[in-house]
Length: 298
Image (cartoon, rainbow, N blue to C red; front, side, top):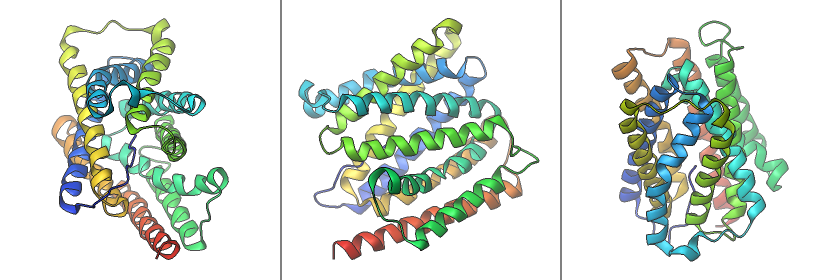
């Protein structure tokens, strides 16, 4: 879950490269999660994802600000993000076991639209008719992807991705509040620690012993997740969010490539149409938000 950091002096090219690297790292991590999901319960995979990244992120956090940077200020919001993280990760892993990466990504791309929609009741922000129209078209794109045939509008896996996207959107909104008092290191560290503890506790009754041949996969997931978090944090620190955020949609390219290379599947034509509608809506929304921000701060 990215934590944007204001850039003192925007540097577009390094920020773009870092964001592309972050998306690639997270896509590789998701491919690893999909592979693990065939052998272990979703909550256990969610716990392993968090545990495997914690040591690497702890080193980064301590190097960036020491122990003081990890001090949480708003405990209730950290606990809320931890609970949302468990829900989001377990739902997404459940979906990955049953859906191609590209299909899961296409549905999950509704998250930026949900963030804008939820910012109205939760943050008191104003959203104009054009942005509401973009949100409506994005949701229409989700319905196209979740058609009655194929993945199925009533598929639990498709609905699980929507639950994950909703959890991500709520978590992103809490970051906006947490960033006023807590450091980036604290926000990142505590959500992973709480996710590991929460998912681990819930998975404990049905815990499946980790097999030796999967140790390297878990290690790779941890490294990819940590590198992705570092790269996305640096990208938002060095570049403007309006320039960096649209690059997250390159995950669809990685999803298609990994689906084809590892599982030998490609998305159908209707999935492409739905994904195009969602991405176009998201890009338009980002453009409108930039125009809105420039109008408020000329």
